[in-house]
Amino acid sequence: MGFDDHGGPLPTHLWGILAEWNRPAGRGQWQAQLGLGAGPRLDARGLRPAEAVEPGGGGREALGLSWNWLPDAFGTDLLGLHAAYARIPSTAAGLRELRQASLGLFLDRGLGPSRWLADTLLLHHRAVTPTGVLRRWHGGAYLQVERAGGRWRPYARLERNVLDGEDPYWSLFPEVLTRRAVGGLRLELGEHHALAVEAGVGRELGGHRWRRGWRVQWSALLP
Image 1 (tube, rainbow, N blue to C red):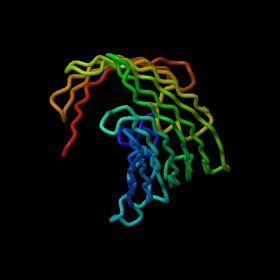
Image 2 (spheres, helix red, strand yellow):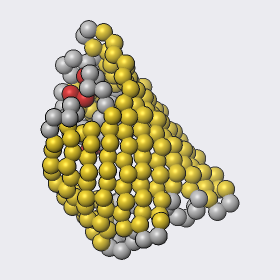
Image 3 (cartoon, rainbow, N blue to C red):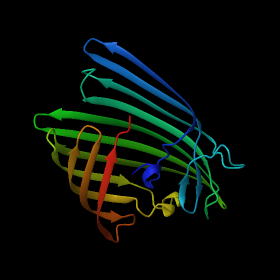
Image 4 (cartoon, rainbow, N blue to C red):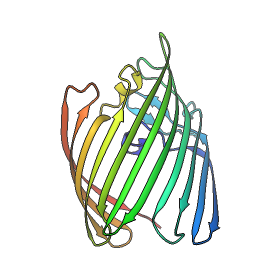
């Protein structure tokens, strides 16, 4: 579905505190993160990060939790559980407040010359509208396979979202699709930079139209 830093419907920015925990277990390692603080606000443009220095700019309570297992503490394979909750005030038409809770499972696994990534997500919305309160369940999943190693890394991804179209929240995120297939090529530029070009096709909520597009993305890991 995508996080709010890319215009998506899932909050990922908090203004608060972050606690981390690591524990070795043989060759592997357990990792946990807990974030508590103020979450985003919602307006006609989508999710807006909390602005603590602006009067009225702060969001309501929010938290995020991840619990990961690394079978090799120095490797990249990972199995993780993630959960989040956010109470989101809204000035968007038709929605006064949204309470979003999510629970998901993530896998990042290397198999021979390929790398596999998968994620499943269960989402619950409690939406306060001018006419009452709506409660809706949604779900999503994706599976991606890519070449492991080398500078040039082709990849392919399948995405599937099961969404209730009566939820007013989705009208604010027209980019959210119920089905999507993506193919791309990523060029690794050293250890901290990458350039990717991808093309995809997806079906809009309601199932009446298909959308095609492509994008170029530059990624950087800053020290």
